[in-house]
Each structure stands twice: as C-alpha cells, then as structure tokens.
Length: 498
Ligand SMILES: [Zn+2]
Image (cartoon, rainbow, N blue to C red; front, side, top):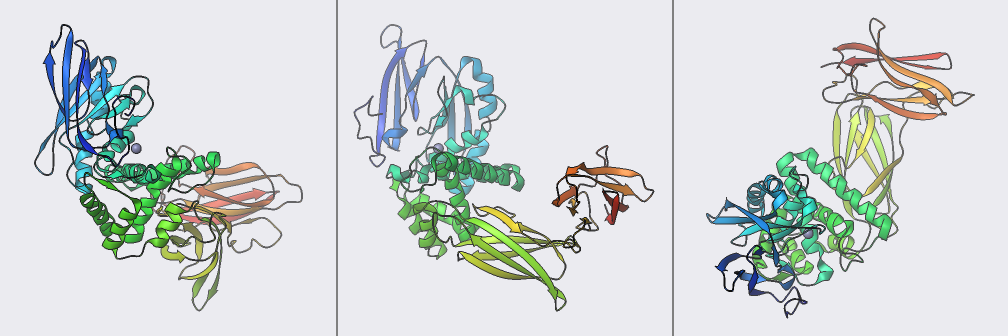
C-alpha cells in the first residue's frame, strides 16, 4: 500500500479510509465497503468513490480495476442486518464464479454461529487475472483466476479468506512476528467448517492433510517456532498453527475454547492484539495455566516424536497391558501433552485410555478384560505428533522357529463395521518363499485370496474386508483361513456375522 498511497504501513495504525478514483468508463473499479459512481466526470471516464467506515489496517486496503462483470447476493445476518454481497468476476468466468461463491452465505452463517455477527456491513469477492492465491482485503477478498473453477474445488480458500474478516481484519495482529494470529486462526476455521459441513471423517482428513503439509515444510526448511517464524507463508504457520488451536481446544474443552474465541473477539474488536492477549483470555476463561502450552507450541519449535512399545500378560483374570513411550524429538527434551490410546481386543471391543505424557521415557499399565489385539495411538487426532509402534506383542506360537498364522481378530466380525485382521509369520530355510493365504467357505470354495507372493522371512499383517473376489460381501457363517507355505498348511476359523 505504501507504494501507492502515503501511509504509515504497520498493522497497528488502523483508520477509516476513503478512495476516489477515475477509470475509463469501459472498466469498473472495485474496493472496500460501499461505493457510489459518477458517470462522465470527464468524457469517457467514470468516477468511483469508496468508503470504509470501520478501522482498516493499511495492508488490508486494495483497489482493483478492470472489465469485471458484477453480480450480487445478500446475506441475512444473525443480528438482523441485510449484508450485501458484491461479486466481480472476469467475463469468461462469471458462471464459474457464481457456482463457487454461492456457498458464501452459508459460510457466513457458520462463522457467525461460532464467532458472532459479521463485523462489517458488506462482503465480496473480486477475481484477478494471473495472480496466485487469495487475499482477505477488508470486505472485498481478492482471488486469483486459477482459483475460480466452478466446481467448488477451492471452497477451503473461500472460507479461509472469509474467516480472516474476523481473525485478521476485525481483530488484527500487532506485529508480523505473530502472523499465527491471522493464519493459524483462519486455517483452523477451515477445519471447523469441514467438521460442521461434512462431518468428522472429513475433519480428520483435513487434519491429516495439514499435518503432512507441516512435515513437508519441515523437510524443506527445518523446524522453527511459530512465534517470529523463519518463514511466514507455509505449513508451520498455517497448518501447524491450525493444529495448535485444535490442541488448545482439546486442552480447555469445547465450551472454554469457543468462549475464549468470542471473548477475545469482543475485547479486541476493530483493534489489535497480541499472542499474550489471546493467551490471557484463554487462561481467564478456562481457569488453566497455559504457560507450558504456549511455550512448547508457540515459542519453541518441533513436535513430539513418539516411539511406542507394548506388550501384555494375563494375571488375576485380566490382561495387564504394558506401554512404554519414549519421546525422541531433539527440539526440546519433553513435550507435556495428552495422548489418547485405544485398545482393540480380540472380541472386537475397544477400550479408550487418556494418558498424559510428561517425561522423556514413560511406562504405563492399562487393564483389559479381554485379550489385547491392537493398539491405536491418538485415533481421534488430537495431537500433532509423529508416532511409531516399534515393538508389539506377537500372537501365541510365534516365538517357535516355524511358520505361524494367528487367529483373526475381531472374531466374530461384522464386515459392515470392520475388517478382520491376521498376523502371519514366514519362516523357511530358503527364502524368499512362496506364500499363499486365502479364505474358504464351509463347502471348501475359495472366497478370496489375500496373499499370493514370494516373501522373505518375517512377520506380516493382513486384513480381510469380508468381500469375495467379485467385491461382494460374503454371507454370515463360518469361514476358514488357510495359509500354505513350503508344502505346510495352517488353518483357522473366522465367524462372519452381519
Ligand atoms: Zn490467510
């Protein structure tokens, strides 16, 4: 902005603003707020007058001019206001823009329900050729033409820029070192939207995608803190940043989390804030001390890297499960974090445990009434981490120096809800060796071949989804697993119940 208009171009110098511009009358000018037009102030020209009556930071001011097609919509705010939605698309893309942007009223309702009334009196989008990305200019988001596709592919970006009207424009960071307050927040709104609009599974895919984006950036640029970052526009700020809010939500609970966001918005409305301000609000609302949370996630770098080993033994009519968790990250000695564990048993039940990790190396003992079959780490995705199971118990008979095939678990199993899993051991003097593992029905007919290949000695896992070679679910009843290796044959039974 400073190159076009003399301005004190820092985010803390907010002011109301006005723009007057003349353009050739074949063009339109587009900027913030509402506008008025004067035709023919001089021959062949048109004059536009824009007014922003709310405080605006210089970086949120933009002016576009071009042969735009204009269309509009209106949104009825939760507080009763009619919010005009002004859209400007390039001629060839009008239909695509209408498709892609028609979701905006629904998004505004979603945002208002979570964070309070839309903080301005207008909103809109303007399509710009040959740019990359999008930018949340106050009340008028600028979006590149390659993000206007007509098939809703970039809905996440449209939501992200809208979310900035609250987090970035209404409440604005004070210092670019704290860009997390803008980008982490808008990115987490994408996750919340995906959860609200498409459900839990979609939310988890979004969180996975964000985690991978963060890991990709770490591979390129290394680990650095979210505060005063080495790079502001990548996976650390946007996607680890979103995860940090997700983990804060877990730490303080949904009620406190959303109350914090609302209170923070009210306190810093139309002004500027800092990370310490946000932390103070979260502490006040939740009653929790968040020093350690902010230290490890905002001011320090990295994530927990967990190595998990587990085993169990039977005693006193139950199974005692022993869990060893080592933190191996080199960014800091210890992360203090919650960790959910789900234990699947061979009856198909599952047990949940909420652990709190506080040490570099820790052991836990859990109890299960049934024989443990599988351990899942953080199944609901509440912790940004890397975790690997480095050792786990083997089924009975796997220690002897010969091939082995475990019972299926869970057993009985319902193909509509789960898969049945098996562990098998390849052991031959001459390896690789041909191994065949297949499912047969009671009449001895082949249902499905699961494994048919040459394998090295070792322990392998395989799952069956209850479908036959044609992809159809098999009927309820008894089935047999058969493994053939080196002329030897191992068998087990599986009960399928729909
Ligand atoms: Zn953004």
